[in-house]
Image 1 (cartoon, rainbow, N blue to C red):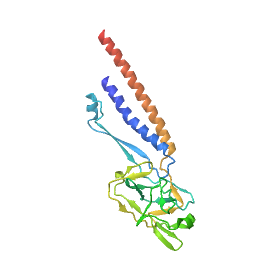
Image 2 (image 1 turned 135 degrees about the vertical axis):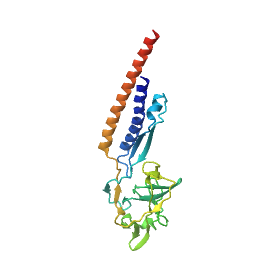
Image 3 (image 1 turned 45 degrees about the vertical axis):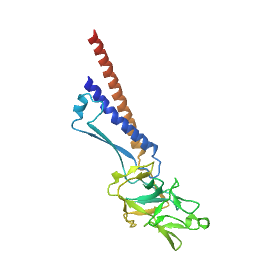
Image 4 (image 1 turned 90 degrees about the horizontal axis):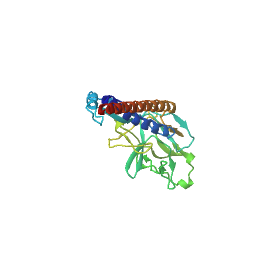
Length: 247
């Protein structure tokens, strides 16, 4: 009986964690550049032993959350300061906490001509912050960014978007909805206009598949409720058995 209670309880914990992950994915289904999360559950060979011994902590079960960096679909915006990376790479932005990395290219121009994110963080180029000269006299439509990331105005080259990559994307940790941080060494990504392309006037949508996540949410909710009812039934049966024992 006790073993059955622990078996039911062991299934409820990872399902609750998965419910939280799926709910967060659904909440960010329309967040530009968002990468969905998944949960990896590994049952160790001594999981059954630890539960049979009545340990409340599921030491034999390892649950790890990880990010799916699959590319999302692109949507055309016709905004010259919207950019999407087609291929593997990240924009670099300067924050008070240090550099952060993102696939969200929803940028704008500050009063002083600095290209910034929707949170006001400066976007980095190959030579530092991207600064547009004389922004008051400039129309944003005159800014052209090539597929290789070169930023120009007319015949004047203003700079180049800084695009970086990492050996192991699993070392990137989320810092907000669409920003990532890491202590791993970054490397410059080769924006060749073929395998890695910058799309001006486009944004990368979230890679969350809403219908798939909703189906998972319903299935997980039903499974969690089933485990809960089973646990309550076993607890009630155990209580009755103890009452009989007292008599």
